[in-house]
Length: 174
Image 1 (cartoon, helix red, strand yellow):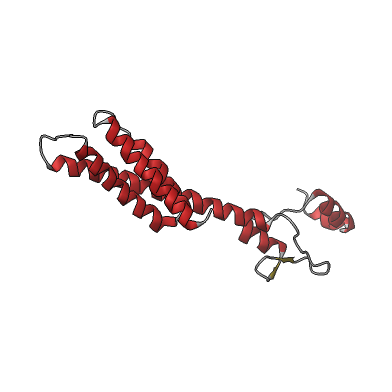
Image 2 (image 1 turned 45 degrees about the horizontal axis):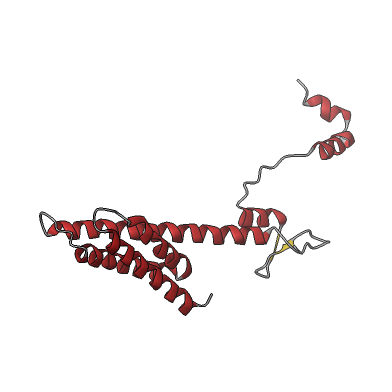
């Protein structure tokens, strides 16, 4: 979906949220439906778009609350409630951006270990998508975030120690 279409869809959802909020009155809280356009903006439009829509949603809620006739015992309470909603909306944008960034990092990690991975037949280095050739260990650490734990496999241990002189093996047995 193209950016103008996404923006139009988000603005339409936000206006629908405002209408539903106004139509249900101040006794019914429809606070959570505002999260739908805010989440969509954070996902599709990025952090700045998400913040913009979160601030706009706060304004839409404020207008809907006043327009449906909600009166407060003190005028400041309207703005305290608006501030609370704004903070919640901004936290939702932060959470959506975190999930999006984490998904992107996971996709990069998967790409490094899937598909056609070039391996040199001579030195056994791996060609990464950035054009550099790295040792297998370096590739595992950099892209897989692996912690390497050096060990000797049983086959190599048998081959290595089978060729060792008997006295070498007997010196280390106590």
